[in-house]
Image 1 (cartoon, rainbow, N blue to C red):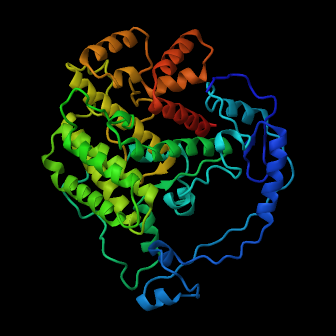
Image 2 (image 1 turned 180 degrees about the horizontal axis):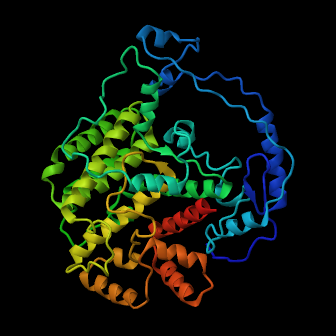
Image 3 (image 1 turned 180 degrees about the vertical axis):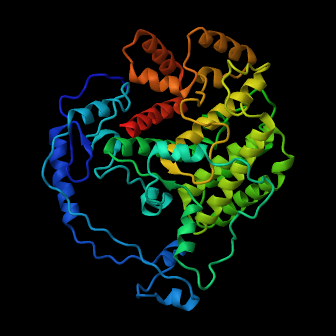
Length: 465
């Protein structure tokens, strides 16, 4: 796709859904569609929360449906909020236009409803996405919907929880009679809840991040296309056992069917339980591989969103947290989030280990930008500004030590951007000659994870506005 830095001659937003458009014809067509959609009466009854989570037919009876009354469990129906659309046409203010161009300045993403197969409705009704993500966190935890507040919350969370205790893990048994609404709310705390960001640009950035994360399980199916936070270990005779098992499960996940789904989730649950039981005895390398596999399993659970999604995702997140805390304890305060300049690697394998930690940290930062992860912070990272950035793609994908050494020497002489805060500062003043050189070097060598970090910069900037 050719790059373009020319600003569109036309930029306006739908007054109903706030979707951005760069063509007036597409905007007018969309407004007609949006008005028809919002004027339609929606009389379809919605199942209660218990029947919906178990994918069971609901009788829609109130105050209790037949199934909930028979089982003696709490029966709650979702509250439908009707919003009166504002059909008047409004022009965006200049500051919104400027922030719109800060999104991804070196790409040509179009917002006209026709580009690259994007749907007409507000982003993004991908097949299955609605079932793979919970509603905005505002619905359950109002007040914690800014990136700054969330990162502060995560950074200040105590890291001194017992690693061996499993008292905090949820019971996998069914709902007991007499459970109240607090039990229902706690179920949402067990899983990733999408954060609420104000503005169409921020929503679009979050959608791009989610699109990419959803592709990671498929990328895990082949060693040649591993996700950008998992090394392929071409110089090893075989993959590490935990990553090899994850690749096999990813292949099963991509070929899943109603007949194979139970076996798939039993395999994932078995791996999670094994990691949880062996956390205290794992080496730092095994802890890293387990963390990588668990991240893939968390994404799988978010995509599939089956009946056991809430309890399973909480177990996965808590085991991931336990592995991170154990790794943090073994490596020290700086071992999990140190730059190569501060802690030089003695060998190629040492560099792979350190770079993998940096990439895991960046991926977790991205997840925290889009989702509320509650009490599962990223160990070793206190603020956005001090998060180390990743190395160039050519270094990461090198298949021999000689190739890696050559790429390392080449990129080290280009004054690369090392910290997330440096990337934010460079984006703020891109016309500065020094920043321009740094950004050119960063864009020339970055991979898919680096592109996602560019999107994280956009989110961080919009949260400050």
